[in-house]
Image (tube, rainbow, N blue to C red; front, side):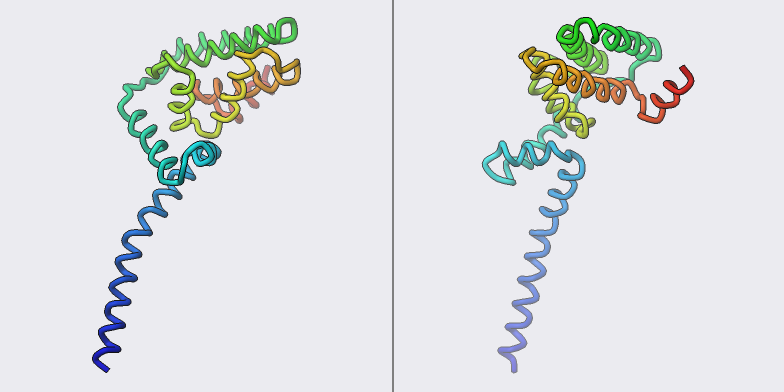
Length: 184
């Protein structure tokens, strides 16, 4: 009887310890997966294991938290919106150049917000912390901008990816764009 009681106590203690060790890890994984979306899966496929991928994503968050990011002024937002409109207008006549200009515009907006812009890979990683839903398309659009060999439809897709990111970075929502387009 006493032996059975000791076994039950040991099993309960082991289960509690296991729960205390496993649950925080699962909660962290869930939080990172929800925050980074497709970028979480990308990190998983590029890392040697789940722990390494999650460590890399957590390091992105830490690095991002050290930036002194600033809101764009209304004048800056208006200037970037005008630049974006000009890029879209030129697309029909010069799609490859428009895609390259869109790439430069994203870098300029990032710099104005306080992000470092020395290296594309870090730019994309930094954006993944705040704009995770746009980073996959941003990476692809940048590849098109650099390679320039995507054809017209690939360039159009790249420009659409840049458009969504630029509008989001400038604080516009799809509803705002749709209502503005309806009144124009």
